[in-house]
Image (cartoon, rainbow, N blue to C red; front, side, top):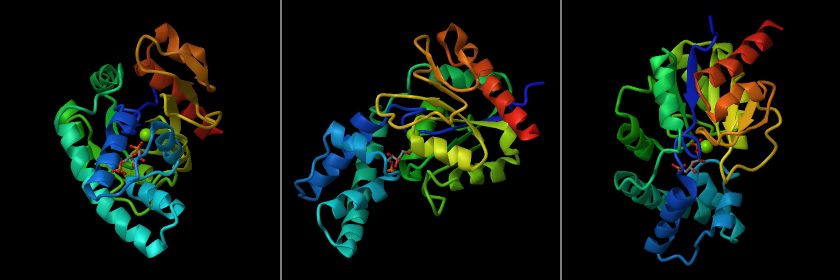
Length: 254
Ligand code: XBP
Ligand code: MG
C-alpha cells in the first residue's frame, strides 16, 4: 500500500502562476496609489522573491531605499494593505491562472483518495477567494496561510501547522513547491518535497527528492533520488507523488 496519505500544495508559483503578472502588478499599482515613484521590474521582482511574504518584501525594499526602520515598517503596512486589495481584484477578475496541468493532478489525487492541503506564505485575504474560484470549497481539507503563522517560509511553521491539523506524520506526506524557501520549509518540517520549477525558480534544489520543470506533458525530470521514472510519460501524476512518498518512507525507516 502506498505510504502517500496526503499532499500539501504551495500556492504562488505552484498551484498558480501568480508572481510576475499578479503580485508584481499589484505591488506597482499600490506604489502608484500611494504616490510613490517605486516600480518593480521583472528582474527586480524575481530577485525580491528571495524574501518570502509580500509585507516583508516591501520592508526589505524600503530599507534598501534608505528609509529608516520605523518609516519602512509603517509604509510597508499601508502599501501591503493596498496591494492585497488590488490583488484580490485581480483574483476576482480571473487574472491569476492555474499552472498548466496542476488542476488535473489535484483531481487525480483526490480521485485516488489522497488528502489535500495548502501551505502558503500568501495572505488569507486573497488565498481564500483564489482557491474557492479555482477549486470550489471542498478540495483542500485545511488551508494554512501566512496570516496564521508567526514565522514565514523558509521556517517550517506553516507545514508543521498542516501536520498538526491533519493528524498526518511527515513521512506520509509530500509537499509540492516551486521555490527554495518552500523546499527549505518543507524539509525543515521533515516533509519530502517535489519541486516543480517555473521561470522564477532560482537556487540550488539538489536536496529535493524530485525536481521537474512542469506538471503537464512537457514535464522533464531535472534531479532527485526519485529518479526519471517518477516523471515517465512527461506528466506529474499520482504515481510521481507516490514515488516521492516511498523515498520518504524509506528515509523514515533508516
Ligand atoms: C509566495 C510569497 C507570497 C507572495 C505575495 O508565497 O512569498 O508572499 O509572493 O503574497 P508561497 P502576499 O509561494 O508560499 O505561496 O503579499 O500575500 O505575502
Ligand atoms: Mg511558491
